[in-house]
Image 1 (cartoon, rainbow, N blue to C red):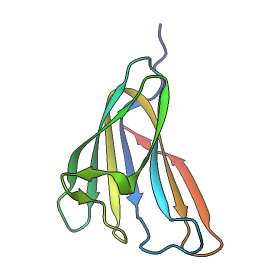
Image 2: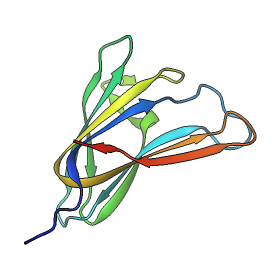
Image 3: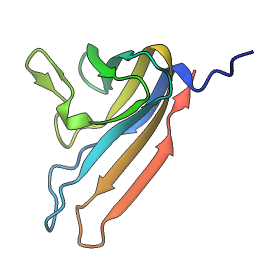
Length: 122
């Protein structure tokens, strides 16, 4: 029996890109995806907001036996991006099982903070 590594549906409920950074490092958040399969993983990302419609069906590919660190600030649907200073949440769906981690670098002050956690699999 083949062991499945990961899941096909993930949720990250807490997202926020700070509008300012201090020092040389830029505050950012990333969806870190590991694809242990030989075939490519085709992801669809949805970004949810508190006060506006979601950005839906943002396509991302993670090559087979590779990882992809996707900066949330790079996610785009048509000409719409995730604005800085606005809370958001993410839903990641994949056509094959992958592992999703979420990382945040907060450089809003000189004593920066790095947070990383596994996303919630559904």
